[in-house]
Length: 120
Image (cartoon, rainbow, N blue to C red; front, side):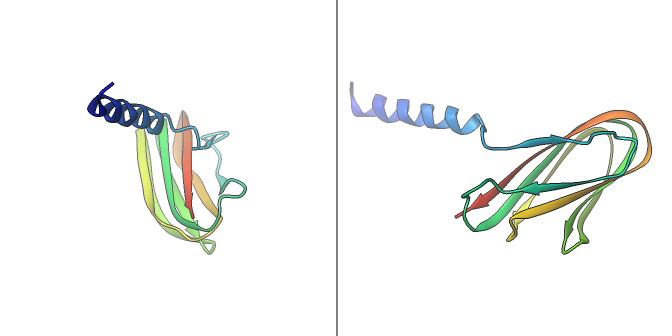
């Protein structure tokens, strides 16, 4: 096997493995008609955290506010409705994060939250 094919094969396998994101935990809003706070946490033995990525997805028949809290205060706040596809990412230096969900006018729906803490 020549080196070009070998390198291309390794790159393809690494790309496929990276696309299969096995390490991103997922949680859901239990009842979209009720307020809820969800604590996100790094995995055990992950080391010092330096970044966080949160992806909210789903669908709402209505409108709600979501907030990422830092030191118990809103750090990022968004209004979500209809098809939800919201990504927050950036520097983060804590082992936990809290998402506050507050329905405004919601009849039904579902919201999932996938997240990843990046650590050293």
